[in-house]
Amino acid sequence: MKPTHPTYPTCLALAILVLLCVTLPIGALHAQPTSSAPVAAAAQTDLAKLDQRLIAAQSSADNAWMLVSAALVLMMTGPGLALFYGGLVRQKNTLAIMIQSFALMAFITVLWAVVGYSLCFGEGTPIIGGFGHVLLRGVGVDPNADYAATIPQLTFMVYQLMFAIITPALITGATAERMTFSGTVVFMALWSLCVYAPLAHMVWGKGGLLNATLGGRFPTLDFAGGTVVHITSGVSALVCALYLGKRTGYPKEPMPPHSLVLSFIGACLLWVGWFGFNAGSALASNGLATSAFVATHFAAASATIGWLAAEWTTRGRPSALGAISGAVAGLVAITPASGFVAPVPAMIIGLAAGTGCFVMVTIAKGRFGYDDALDAFGVHGAGGTIGALLTGVFATQRVNPIFHDSQGRSLPVGWVDGNPSQIGYQLVGIATAWIFALVGSIVLLKITDLVVGVRASEEQEIEGLDLTEHGEEAYNLEM
Amino acid sequence: MKLIKAIVRPNKVDDVKDALGRVSLPGMTVTEVRGHGKQKGHTAIYRGKEYDVSLLPKMEIEVVVPDNLVDDAVAAIITAARTGEIGDGRVFVIPVEQSYRIRTGERSDT
Image (tube, rainbow over the protein chains, first blue to last red):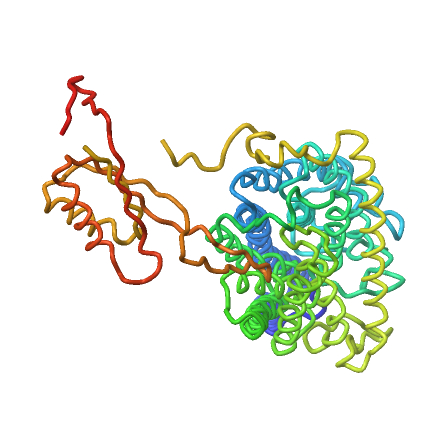
């Protein structure tokens, strides 16, 4: 999302510079009244130079923040998500789940350079981008003004790549402890091109069907990826859990997390990394980035309290796993809303996600009987949907004047602004993401199953995927 | 010659070790074990799913003693390891037929 107004300090700086440009040449004019034409030309050149310097200064500031943000989002996958999930599995599957996240850091990156970026952000149809940027053709240090006018397109490209990495990695929470490594790699690669790329293009790409500012038919608000990242991965996670079937022994055999300490560290890294994810989605180091940063933090805090309160009242004890699960649920839900809502509505969204995801994970999952091993659907699918819907309720032009009329006047954004029809557009976005994820995942799982197989054998599961898939163990603490 | 096998609470190992030292029995082998007797386990809950933790961590102490020290050793262990609550553990006394020292190969019957 681009800032639509220059900020106050920028205006001030600009005014001073313009004043200097105008007064200095006037002084020169008085000193040498006979040569006015060259002096005027020189003034023009000075003005242009200062203008360039101003642009360069803003670009430097924005680029610094965006590079840091890109690194923060990568940190969410490894080590953040890898530790979070790694601690939740049984000891014999620790490395298998961690290496899946790490492998996606490698495979999706290569795929992104070849065709992924082009399919997401190249010009194409309303559903998917074209092949204009295949092998990163035309992606250099010059900005792409459609997406982010002040940073190199290379920065934008690498920042978006980090989102493409973490999204399929989230799905591994549902396939944990029973999907083969080869099946995971093939499925995730296909999924990245056939589910992630269309959704990213529809919501964020120029001319995408759901794009809110660049000519979309159904302007859906999704600041940092509630539909693109969390609904797609969460719903696909549910499909995977159903397709793969339950883990051997589930639910009779106890399968407690092997190290909540690892999960705890992972969750804390996710919380910090999420500032890059959400505040970075302003694509500039501006006031909107701060607003998204604050909303993100407040939502995570209230969601933690929401989950803990629900747990404490219904189960009698507040747990560490409950606290970190609640925080992640809140971060998921605030993702689409982060650049559109004020801090207090952010806390309401967080609270709704913390309690809502608690119900999904502890009650709904048991009732329906699917084995979403690490609750990728319960947290990302449910939290993403809650967040995308509530974005339509709480988005306001006071935070982000994203809609304008033909005279450039700001228009109401969400329901709180008096634009209830935005809820309808949010529902269109949510439905599109659900349908793409459902259909796409079923087809791609079937293909992957035929080509390399998806499910580990029962012997492998009993022995553990660390030894049978990778030939190593997470812990060799004994002599 | 007897093998005394005591299963005690993990936090009582040091007390038992000191007590055995006082009856001139310095050597022992300690192993981490899990089990349960009359003591019930407890329930752990992870994301709403309950797990019964029925096998509790205990420490097993093995010590080989001459016949004339068996009563003192058993009394020392019981005194040191007792809290009076369920879950204090058990002591078993088992006959030992032969014993050899690996370094020297000598047979020792004491």
